[in-house]
Length: 442
Image (cartoon, rainbow, N blue to C red; front, side, top):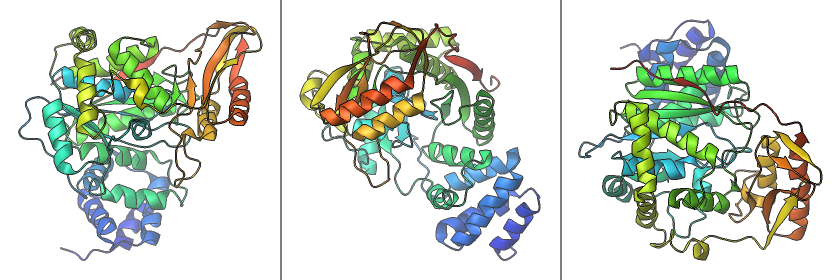
């Protein structure tokens, strides 16, 4: 075997050549064990950024990053191992409902989730609103929870796809984050390390999405579907709308309450229900659990109507350290903000547009997200009862209800919220699911 020289691999990519799978494996191994310096990592990322990668290179990079650490396997489970990934948005608490619904439908869901990023909330931050919930359980607890209950929503540990952390740390400071190949490998390496048989992707487009442009979102979705299937995991993607909040809540504890209300049937936001069922039905067909989408949708609806899904959610919370009666005594456990009040529209008309990025940053400003990585989070703050596009309001109609730590913080957030809402003629709403990208049938 020829000696490993990172600079030669960098040179070939710099000059526009396609790298072999062996080149990529060796570079990622060097990245993981320290033989590749930060300077070489940055040069490699910039070479990829400028010249990109073809489909084979993307698959090889994803597999090498997946294999840079522990890859989970589940040989003893009776049922397919599946998961979903969302590119994030406002009011996106889908994982909290979909994981227990899939578990109740006969799947196993080892869901590796993340924290808030920028204006979008994170699933782990929401779950940490629950007293005692352990987002980083030891391996035995994690595996037992998945095996016995069917789902566990936890954070990424250092031994899963460590090459991704090493590469992203350098990308973040070398202006190479936005490359499609590097984004795809980063997302999929972590997901595929969980040992999945099937995966569904929710790629969002709109002013509240990281990929605001629908064409860019579609390119990302296509690339991830191509690479994940090329890596051996049956994967589909839905391109979905993020021009209005998905749930009627944005924050942490408020989204947990919204999710529990959804599971119990107390309140199910229509957009949220549609996207949960759309993602779930796609995944059940991918995993071979049902023959088609209508049968899958009926099965998922049964998990809600029968109470099976909320029962799985409650058991998951208990298994991961939370209270045994969270669902029954939710108000006793979730943190409550000292100031809770309506934010009135102050004018009349229809909700014609919502600046979701500003809405998300308003939650961050209240303390519900992080301005810096080291910041703590106030789990009690945020908004609920958020109005959606096309809703008619008068001057005294609440646009939302605010949950804040102080009156001063509430005043500032209320002003920002009103500015994020535009009133005018009733708008034409985009379809919630704009496109479905699915692999060929087996």
